[in-house]
Image (cartoon, protein in one colour):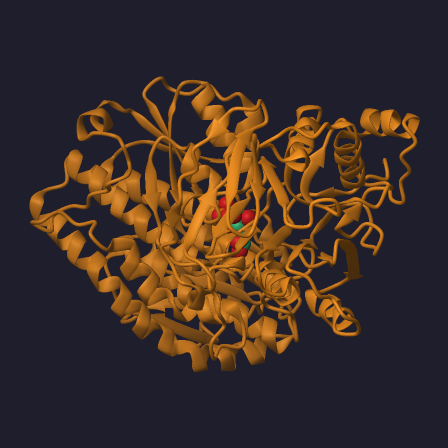
Amino acid sequence: MMGKTQEIMCGIVGYVGKRQAKGILVEGLKRLEYRGYDSAGLAILQNGALKLEKQTGRVANLEGELDKRAFNGNIGISHTRWATHGKVSQSNAHPHVSSDGKIALVHNGVIENFTSIKKFLLSKGYSFESETDTEVLCNLVAYHYAKQPEVDGQSRFAESVRRTLFHVEGTYGIAVLSTDCPDEMVCARKGSPLIIGVGVGENIVASDATAFASRTQNVVYLNDGEVAHVTSDDFNILTISNESVDPIVSQLDWSGEEADLGDFAYFMEKEIFEQPSALENAMRGRFSEDDSTTKFGGLNVSPQEFRQMDRLLFCACGTAWHACLVAEYLIEKYARIPVEVEYASEFRYRNAPLDKNTVVFVISQSGETLDTLAALREAQRKGYRALAINNVVGSTIARESDGGIYQHAGPEIGVASTKAFTSQLLISAMLALYLGRLNDMSYGDGRRFVEALKAVPELVALNLKVNSQVEAIAKAYAQYDDFLFLGRQEMFPIALEGALKLKEISYIHAEGYPAAEMKHGPIALISELCPSVFIIAKGEVFQKTIANMQEIKARHGKIICIAPEGAEFPDGLIDDLILYPDCHEAVAPLLACIPLQLLSYYIARERGCDVDKPRNLAKSVTVE
Ligand code: F6R
């Protein structure tokens, strides 16, 4: 393997203004730490000279070092890294500095043609301290800057970055400083998000608005292929092919406080308890006047067009893929429209034959997941209408989709998705209702459905009261190293989600299975050392699931069961029973999910894991 590092899911923050940059950059990095926490670095221009610090590990390590010496200056760039290739080391951390000492650069992405560029730069006398593609990019800016003539009314620095990017293949979000231009920052994006937070007498650039939402609500989302020249009082945007761009300043729809931890120990806990309001927000303004169906302003598909379609294809990754599986059950059940579900990472390369009247939906909390974005683009390339269910307003997926439904769940910072998932489930139920009402669902059934949806936030609030019971159960089970999660029908995706939540934050091996499939293999795992978590709904497979539990009990397996209020079980079958409120079938998966979130959260805490920053993970996976 080549020694290059690829910085793909990292966080960038840049500041130019009248205040001290250091504190603002460190605060921004802390807020972006969920994007990566392998190493962090910062460069500030102090009286025209670059001051640089990089540390492996968390932003707190960097902050500790920064406190040891003066770092004064009103302009700076910073980076928190999630390593995909290449080791975690100080030399691989960003910012990188050109060999002439003039240019400092932070980068997310991969420069694909860096080997040939490096050869060229070596022949021109540039030297390299690391094996990174980012250092090559940084030196290429220095090269173009050195040969770029001054032109009146044009920033020589911005022009040299633009020319650099003209020669670069790959993906990037970058922020760049030059010692010759101590009042200017240049940034650009292609395939990696970058947002300008527009302030008064200051501007902040970041990979995610969370970094600056407490300072300004005015944002400009850079598009792929755009280069921005940013000073404290102004910014200009050009495309790489030198066309000027009229920037659109939008408003964030959430405030800085929403991205704060408040009194909670972890963001995951905070976000679990925020679910009643997140779900309320997903429904706001989305019911018809007669409360018999839902309406979605941004779908851009007329009822007539929806009636023409024969099939839906849902694509996503991870937890959002589990939401797709629930959507499949709900839409097929209530709207009788066939639905297929694909992993976005598979769909993009599978060249699947699709029916000509298919509409594609992608689901993504961040709206930046690379595989999901690629699936969206592939569907559009084939001429299909591709819609998105997405939480982050202005994300790449939101902007590139042909229409969609915003989740309005507020910022989700914990790496393990919780409130975004339940909001995706609620929106899937709302969509099933909408499509059902376009087909055979009656007015009366529609009204009952709407009533059930409206009750969800309150039921979830009630449901969250199982927290101390679940905490006690978590204590009793935290030492087990293997778990099975089992459910049937629409509870099968919830079993998958329960297993994913547990494994990702507590590093316990957990598998989700359809309960009846268990006897075709996984039952071999059952012993007193491998507990099973059953997720159960009312309805026709209830008794069948009890039979599955008996198969486990006969093999000395412990059983935790998550069941609706009123469910009755044979004596001695269940070791620990957690009830969720009785509700409409369409929202039962959502309600059953809440105790599972709590279970994984409390088990992870019991095991002393860093819940919000699980090892090897990052929130937004913008890598293949
Ligand atoms: C797990 C989790 C991930 C994400 C996946 C897709 O808790 O959060 O599995 O669901 O990486 O992310 P988005 O929804 O941002 O596309």
